[in-house]
Image (cartoon, rainbow, N blue to C red; front, side, top):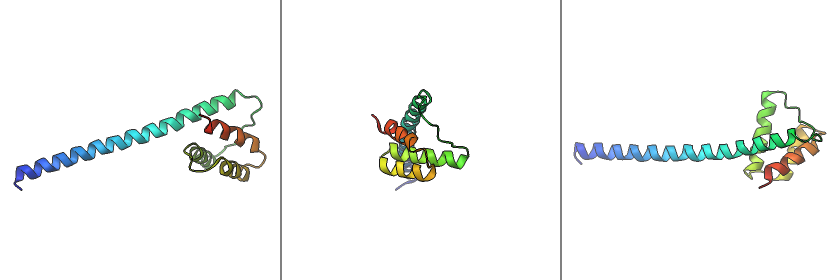
Length: 108
């Protein structure tokens, strides 16, 4: 392979890598966006529901746990039953709140 062919091959490989990376970022952004959109809808729904008992997410760690669990349910990485069980362990007395959230997160 001469110098020109080697350079051309490297540029082609770099272009392919760039396209693949852009595709992955777009897919990841779209996935994140679908969950973000769903959570925005869920939050609006529970804020409008006077019977909903807000879960006291007072620390960053609690909010991170909650959003991680919610995203896992939304992406079907855990079952509704697991979500409810985890929520009841973390926040006893808020079972109805977690049930409402689970229903909203899993609704089409």
